[in-house]
Amino acid sequence: MELVPNYYKGRVALNVLAGSVDNAKEIYEAADGHVVCGVLTKNYPDNDSCIADLKKYQSAVNNAISVGLGAGDPNQSKMVSEVSQVIQPQHVNQVFTGVGYSRALLGQDQTIINGLVSPTGKVGYVNIATGPLSSKEMATEVPVTTAIALLKDMGGSSFKFFPMKGLAHKAEYKYIAKACAANDFSLEPTGGIDLENFEAILDIALEAGVTRILPHVYSSIIDKDTGLTKPDDVAKLFEIVKRKLA
Image (cartoon, rainbow, N blue to C red):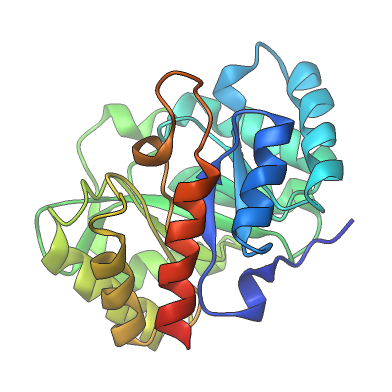
């Protein structure tokens, strides 16, 4: 099963939710394979049922799977790690404190693991207290470059900045993009991204020089009646990506 995603074949790929195996296939085709299909552990009652379902997704999209928490829920951290150990997906979503556990259980360094950090309202600082217990305490604000170094120490691959609320934290995001570029670290902007602001958010990361960018575009492109991600919208996002990288 392919562990290294198309993410590494270009500077940008997409992370979108797959509502079904067929939906995952449609998404994968719409983005010409430059996508990881998010499946949320929060939607399953236990590890076994999640693993059984994820194996179907894996077969359908050449393992372009992103094992998700579910709105950054820290209580899903352990389940994400344990499911990923078995599945060996291309991408894993983790809270900051769960990155080391995920990397150790995976037993390899190819799968991308992001570490969730949150806005603080202060340019140059992020909140790393995003774990099951730490998220209940006071925010722990650390310099962005320190957070990157800590993630690297734990085997992390990428900075997941969430919740961005679109461009509400633009100045903070710009600083993070420059820091990721300077430290050769991937960046995953997440939260409130839609067809209207996607290009502006992508531009900031590209102009900063970030070499690997994985925007998460979730609820804004989901059909409210079916609960499935709209392949046509994925295609529109991918057209923007191709235009920017041309």
